[in-house]
Length: 199
Ligand SMILES: Nc1nc2c(c(=O)[nH]1)N[C@H]1C(S)=C(S)[C@@H](COP(=O)(O)O)O[C@H]1N2
Ligand SMILES: [Mo]
Image 1 (cartoon, rainbow, N blue to C red):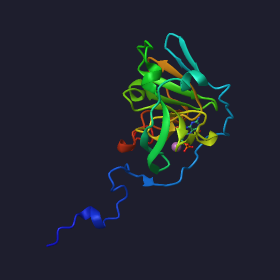
Image 2 (image 1 turned 45 degrees about the horizontal axis):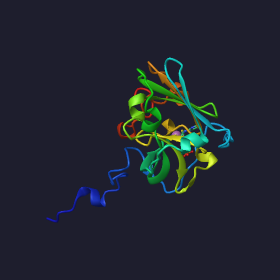
Image 3 (image 1 turned 120 degrees about the vertical axis):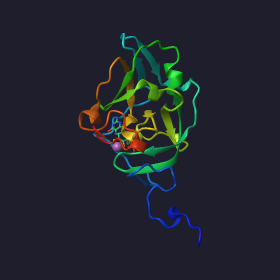
Image 4 (image 1 turned 30 degrees about the vertical axis):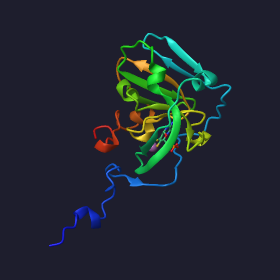
């Protein structure tokens, strides 16, 4: 009897082990935005982390760009079922931005220049797994993809990666963001298929 692994002739999607259940791979880069692209220029750009006590830590573009940055190569997964492998970014690790900020918070609300919000547990933004990304594929991040800078949290569904992010608000309890109030999952792990509340 020939030894042929079942997976070899199978038509299962995601049999590369990198495509979460219910996802298919794409090579293009779809744009998904709730509203129009806000035009934010780097001379007006500002990013802030606000603690649960209301203390605000601010960076303008030059200050943010003076921080050490990294070049993550990561897989991204959109809840609308596309996944894209080996996407290349450049950005500041959120560990660097949170460094020296004293907080007892458990959750974070990310808010963006277009009014978009999304909630995440603080631990998901730490440990070298999340970035404030300002380059994609060797070029400045294009406005439709969140430029000048967006959150990049690739281990969660891509709606958690807020484009045009302006503020991270530290919270001592969880609160739903825009899509989460509209039925999307609070956590959003693509490997657990946490698409909707209750998944
Ligand atoms: N500010 C903002 N961030 C956002 C969105 C948005 O509408 N506004 N859409 C989210 C969704 S649902 C996805 S899938 C990704 C899409 O990112 P892309 O347009 O770069 O592919 O951005 C996320 N971040
Ligand atoms: Mo999405």
